[in-house]
Length: 341
DNA sequence: TCTCTCACG
DNA sequence: ACGTACGTGAGAGAC
Image (cartoon, rainbow, N blue to C red; front, side, top):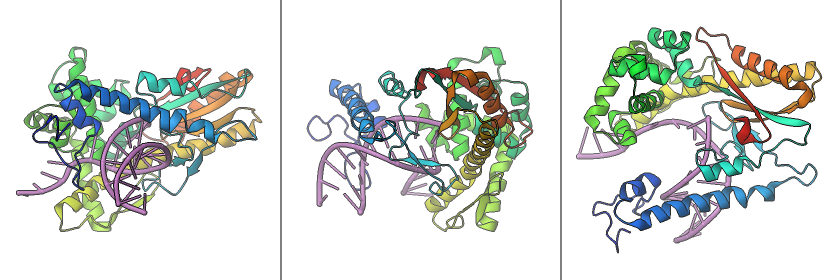
């Protein structure tokens, strides 16, 4: 593509000097030759085949006839769980072909169904809480969609007038903020001029001044103390937070912002998991908690216990850690993991 | 074992 | 001038 077809005279190299060919790079070249799209399709299919279709059946346990992951409790620096051998926290869901793989995850027999329970926009609610950001707390309290509410504020229009592009941009900012994204990063992500991205971010901080204040106070705290902490006081130490190297320091500063948010969400779901496990045992229920995917819990539920388990799960997830901001849980039921979503 | 890429939240 | 969004695990291919 680069040496022979010369599709991109300014082709970027990776830090070891090879041509970068990640999806973002290829998408920008898609109009130059039909082979680019073919490569993307080939990549999608070979990824699904090698990582899931061929690999998962090899990991079926002889005794149980099922796959069993191992969760790492002290692996991820933020306090999240990690899942390996097989990783059940990265089962495909975003593409049509990927979703076919989700359908393979089914309950043990016809007396059971799968129930999936998801926290709704948990990290945004947590940042609103930790920052005590009035406008964001108010939007949550009023049951508004946070991305739409953000778009209305940033673009200065009525909630009902928000276009799908405005909502998409606002959603990207909401996520980007959690990670400490720059105007450059947002412009790359959305394919808009950097100047426009900078305006969106400026408006964002004007509408949500509490978030801006929280971010700078969190970085100050980290510089002073050498660590940041979650709602449950889990610490992440940041040795580079006072580095003289701006790039290295920048990484540490983004970690300082992200870790309390991602980590507090992890704290919350872990408390919920303990309380749910204890309650299922106390009531001697047959249903089992089978998986955790960061903001989602999956259960194998006996038909006769469906309503009882759903009510326990929803209640324990919502009340795991008492907060000002309302915590919403979305639940679904089905005969496979895709249907349960 | 390392690098790159890509699956997920 | 420089780099530029966080956290993971796994497979392919090169060495």
